[in-house]
Image (cartoon, rainbow over all chains, first blue to last red; front, side):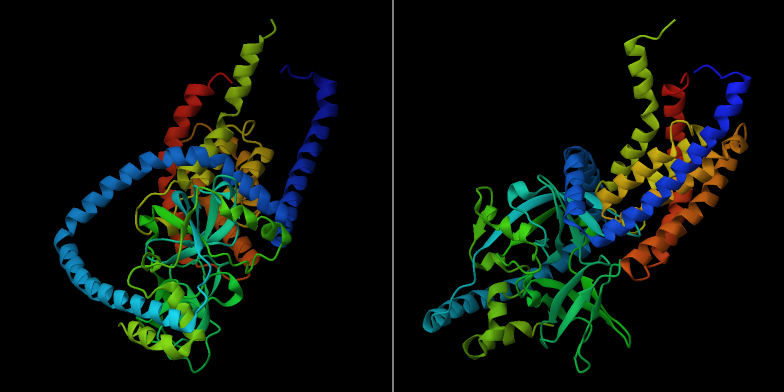
Length: 338
Length: 171
């Protein structure tokens, strides 16, 4: 660009400075407008977030592969370092699990018989979608992950997301081929939970640390470190009985829970739709529920495999509340695990 | 002599390199690494790049570009909308006016400059994020994240200097 000569420069330069200043102020104002707009949590913003996730997901799923192979090397080195301890621990755990497997088989059989006797209506079958983690929105402010499944695969906002160990979060924004998972540790996450043994109800509230807090606990609740925390199914967002975490510390002002998943090792997640509308109150989301019978989902009945880890079966566990008679002895014995 | 179409396209493509590099760094920061505890203290790679380009090429890292990059970051990471935009915009405005100061000085001066600019930037992000989520966010990971970000600046700057010398020398 050619430099302007004297008089022109004198006229245009102040105008340009004024324009610059005006643009700057306009952008600052836009920032605050965006904050208000984002706080209002409109469907539009959700759509845009979903679209943004969609746009980068092809790049991320390609780029995540080399990253995963680097992970492989580091985890190999890590596992070599504590091979012996790991082996001891696994043997111990295996012995324990075999005992539990026996108990679970017996209970499953017994439960089936009792259900037949009482003509118990089975809970609806659940639909599952497996997805790879393609991004981890780390940082002091964000506790979410990006996964490679979207509305194309039947994923909808609000569905539960499980790792092998237990609940990891819920779908916050669903794009067409990718979605964002809000982890249970995020400050915006509130999950209705209960303590496995005492059946005390509470909310698990994230606070962006890796140890979310139990809130709205009743004063007479009896909680000790080591207690298992399960979803309670209240509010209809998640079914009851999904393992969430283990109480890690109990003090005067806060009961903290250690989630079951290890964030840096999560590779594949399962998005589970239990057919519960729950918090999906907006008509748009409900309208899209019929999509759920599409082909690339696996349909799981309530089977032994649905129980995560050594937990009692989610479905059975939930029914124990409503059916104290026949079903509670199994649950009691299962729940007494230290 | 008028520049040809290809030449003009080339210039346009090159002038988007700074903004594009910030976007690439954003994606690099999003990759799932399986390093324990990293997720809590991820360095703010994008902030480094916005600062670097605002200092060295304020004509290519404009306020508008900073604003848009912040918006993309908020949309992708699920942060409250507008916060990163504001932070990037202020960092851009603060460092674009300091470009002459860093000229022909040792790299350490720029490093210090970044550390000084990044402090308020982190604090601002923390304040606004806390205000918008209605609770105080944990402060310790923020401090660690700041220290890692400040410590990693030379590495990112080294890459960006290579890009600048390779692609933007004649622009």
